[in-house]
Amino acid sequence: MKINWGTGIVIAFALFMSFILFFVFRVQSDSKYDNELVVEDYYKQERILQDQLNRQENAVSLQHQLKINSTEAGVEIEFPAGFDAAKIKGKVFLYRPSNQKLDIEKPISISASNLLIPKSDLVGGRWNITVDWEYEGKGYLNKKEVTVY
Image (cartoon, helix red, strand yellow):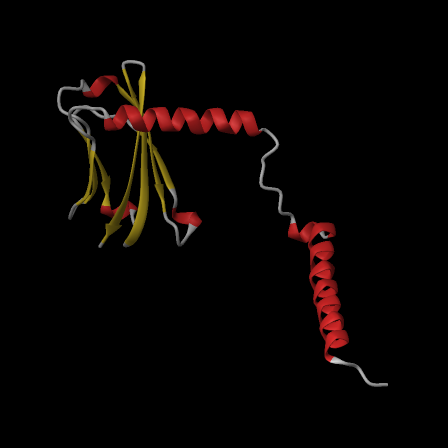
């Protein structure tokens, strides 16, 4: 039996389609490949995200910005000048991308306009720092990536 080139192209195309369909059905039917992109409480998550965006906008609109710096003593977070330190409430989240066990969450309780996280509490390397704070009922959110040496 001799196969001409037209028949060969049709057979190759059918085999390729079968190959692709096999993997599509395999991924869709196997729970190991769960590819659900939407969370169950989608609207609740959307409100949380919108609240974070509003807090970030509030932080950007400040006349004096919050500053996060890596110093010899550790990581220093300097709150805007003119804010009463006693009225600042919130949390500082320090995320270590390479090791989840090193993540730190600290409440903000300060008497001066800055907060120092000692170098002894931190391991050298990259840290993602999120400061979620509130002053006189208005929320602010600042994020920065810092490298500790």
